[in-house]
Amino acid sequence: MQAYPALYNWTTYPLTTALDIAYKIVKTQEQKTNEVSASLIEFTSVIERGINFMHTGHAGVISTSVMNPLHIGLALIYDGLPCFNNQSVTLRPGMIQVHLAQWPFDHLKFLPRTSAKCALSHEYGMDFFNVRII
Figure 1: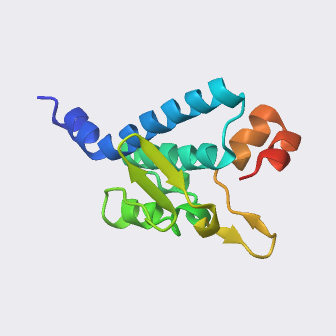
Figure 2: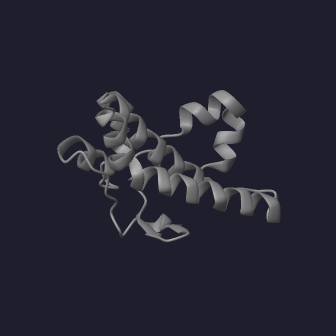
């Protein structure tokens, strides 16, 4: 009996669905303007980290400075199911809206908090990251 794969599919369904929607939005934006919203890239990173945690159980993938204010970090650790702060992110069928005014912010560095910095700077360089930050 394959209970565990079915359980993972069931519990990660909200995040994999959100990831599919984000991918479709990114492809549409890219085709229309040849640019992609950095906030959507950041939100995608949060979703991917959530899926990673749900499959591995390793809390090290949770970027607490971003994911806890969005509620998904603590929700995954304590409840095991994802949820988002609806003041920061609105999810509706076929739509993801990131509310930048409510995004977690580092007041000391005067920058939005990010979980994608490492991947973006490694893949595209620090110049890309500095220009494209949310």
